[in-house]
Length: 619
Image 1 (spheres, rainbow, N blue to C red):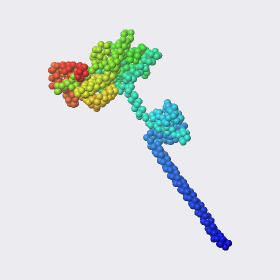
Image 2 (image 1 turned 135 degrees about the vertical axis):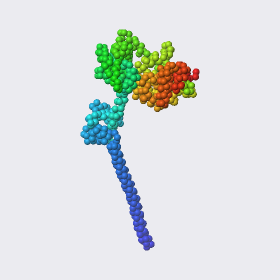
Image 3 (image 1 turned 90 degrees about the vertical axis):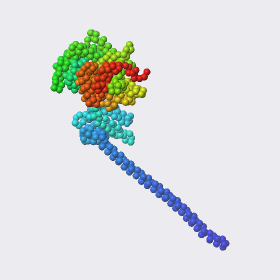
Image 4 (image 1 turned 45 degrees about the vertical axis):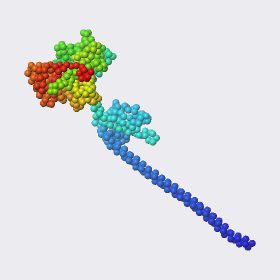
């Protein structure tokens, strides 16, 4: 018993100790778990603090970026070189920049007191109504349109309006961003170019192109409503004598004076045009035959009374007038009829008018003339023109390395080769000569290229009409053909006849200088035939003078011709140019020309014209 009691006494403390240890372990475990939970909570807190700091940093960065974007927008808006405006959906200005104030002439306060619509030209207000609706509906992101806006000084300026839309995050339209670019200068230039396309440079009258368009409209109106109308063709008598005696400047002044005199004799509803060198035309709408004859007679008498003051001289000028009624004719036919009547007036003694009368059989002649034009167009399309060449002899070297290009037309029915005098007159009179000259230039350049590939470096001289020289399209055509062929441009010599009527001397200058800049050469044909030679020398950059044949034919027996040729050679040498003598018929003429210092000779004694391909290319 004593032993058992003693053992129980010893076990009790140990149990208590074990129990306490267990309790302690439990407390320690709970404490450890609490520490872990606290650590996790601290970690989460730190994460959340870091996340908050990151979000705050991002928020601040976003705000900074937003401020920078806003500042850049404000700067771009304020300093933009074009007009900028924010406009609410009712059209009121919210914000405008300095450029828009400059364009419109208004201050910011003045602009904000009005609306864009109120400043818009009445005819342009609703031009963009459909585009604006598409923008609001979301069918287009922006649109552009040209409009006129009233300037503060009272006039209108042209603006290119670009409109886009700003929406909120729900897609609702907030306001419009309008950009206005001042295009007044561009529009003015476009209108000027449009004016130049339709008007004669010298007189300011409408040109042949525009006149023919109006004739076509009038022909349609007459055919529809039957009201009579008439056309007058006016040609100055002996105009070339004025150019030769007084020079081209005086001739230009005369043409401007005549244009003014005719303009004062016709009605405001009539249309006056310059359709050729010294040729004018008048469309008389709603005019019967009696009224038309009175108008034609009045113009003839007015021209007879007109005194042109040219420098210190006064000269009288007369005109021959042709009259034709539409009377069922097309625009081309009525102009051809008036042209024929004008020539009848010249043949009857000039200084008068003649009426085209279909009852006298002239209709057949008009039809024949128009058929000739159509035949020429067909010949161009079918490539029935043929190039001939006449050799040009180098008198120093005694060799032929250049040829003048001459034109022939193969008749469609007989196959006969027609000389230029059989078709060029019609082409000149009825506006087809530029197309023919363009064909010749292209073919000549192609042949030069073909010769170079065959190892032959020859020069070809090509004659162009005054109408072509004065046509800006011819320079562009020639440059394009040269670029495509890749030839040495100095192998092409453009010849202009001294007596050619250049309708636009400024355009001719541009033509000459453009082609000279490309490396082409120019020759003045018939040099010495009149005072016009010296006008052209002053205004156009020629490289060769082709001496008029009248001084060459009799040079062997005429000391005067020898003196003239010697003088021309002296002028040419003094200017650094070369001379070519035409119509050489014998050895004595060749000898005298070489002695006089002429550089080149051409004529039947040197060689007759032959098909150019036969002359230059091997069979």
